Image (cartoon, rainbow, N blue to C red; front, side, top):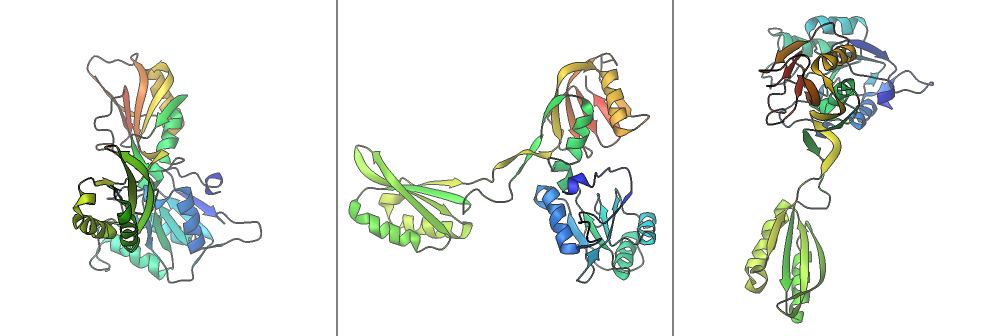
Length: 325
């Protein structure tokens, strides 16, 4: 398990040799390593605006003996990684975020790509995928608050729909002689799965059809029904949603088992983060003796994640805690 070998601490640079390997080998194929990283925190957890995953890939085949971890990949960090003979750099923040129109020696980000490719070093960034993961950065921050119950502020959704298709179409057929015609028509449409069951409406025995449809198949189903008004009049079209994932998502809302003073909470946070100081903004009328029961945590700036969330304390990654008034 990756989690038993690596703890990603976003304020340090660590060098890990022979990651996720058995005692009989000291390297790992890049594709196999990427699969293990995705098992640890699926890239599907990442925010839609983020740029995560493998950003620079050396020509295959590529094996990884040394994996270099960093919070931010700068030119100084790249130099250190090359000195350590790294095969893959895992940079928490993506060094490539916006599209590059050219790769020259003019800007430092372009130079990172050039040096990585020249030295056959891959670059991988998990960023918000690691923020959202059940064992990720936000969860680690929440563990420093003491005994509490936590949940994601914005839960992630599963990468796939629970059933085939993105929409469900339901309608009733009254006349028995129409059943074969309807079944034949809808089963002939690609991307449709059909179930039916007996129903009763207006004291009539009817058959209720439930069709799971892909986006492409939906229009064909609607076209068929629109040509048969007796079905179409009682048609319901439902948009399916990907299910929410437990313990996965952006931010954490943590409810302490017992309230503590703000001063006590600050000391706990400092111990957990191994910091001598944190920045604190006190709300109007609040003091260091004010009680803290609910803490909202975000591993990023929190401007969008924490908006509208009620808490006694807001802990963000911009090195400060906010105690609202």
